[in-house]
Image (cartoon, rainbow, N blue to C red):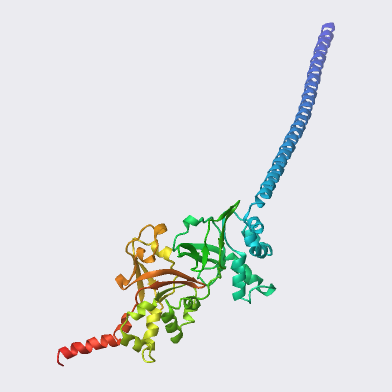
Length: 410
């Protein structure tokens, strides 16, 4: 009995110890879990704190970097403004205002923001008319001047501006210079009108009128070349050719007689104009026939054969040295072939014929290049081109036919 009680007690005490041990283990596990949670929370707080410190540091670095960049930008702007301020004292417009020869053109330019900005661009050549040139021009053109002609004046001045530096020694005869004046009638939209360089009594001449007699004035952004005449933007082809009375008068008269003035006003034309001397070389009977009412339809075909609906400046023709080019004439299904037979270095050429631009295998050669116009260009040629459809109607050909029949005794 006692043993059983002791045994029960010992068993119960053992059970109690096991429970106590279990409870102790559970308490330790709970404590461990709490410690781990506390440590994790501390780690998270520490990480958050570190992240905040890091972000604050990055923000401070970023702010410092932005401040430095702003300072650099401000310094660059200040230095750029300073350079511009220094350059403005020696740019083209400043030179014009300071030189007594150019006070009139300087006043015209200053009134226009467009012109002022153009003359402040980099690498500009300005052909500056002197006061004497402007006075002479205004005497001959009383309608220019005043508010109603400001746009016209602006166009005229733009025609004196070239968007690159062109020193005097690089101006060879036949050189074309693109100006700031854009026109619609040259075929392409916003095509720039050209100035053609030539010679007058040994001096460089622009458009065969305005002489450049001295070396250009060097500015901070380009060159100023004094000229003794205003460069007026060219008019339509017929009007331009009318200004060569002893060179192109026969061709112009024929154009007017055949009512082709409107055709000559179309966009983007190249006109091969026989010189007056070329017409003189023709058979007199043929001329009488062509300029008579009976032969006028054939004269019209001849003229249409000399008008091409493509724009071919001489420089573009000379680029095709290795192969001939074909121009489509206004006469239906008729083409004109131009071939550069031989060509010396273009910058050294004096006369266009030295380039030997030959038409239709020797039927004519180009004698004078690029009479520039508002709607194209004209090249003066040595002979009149006669299309096949006209040859059989010419009196000289009929006479030779009659002679051949007479020789056969028919």
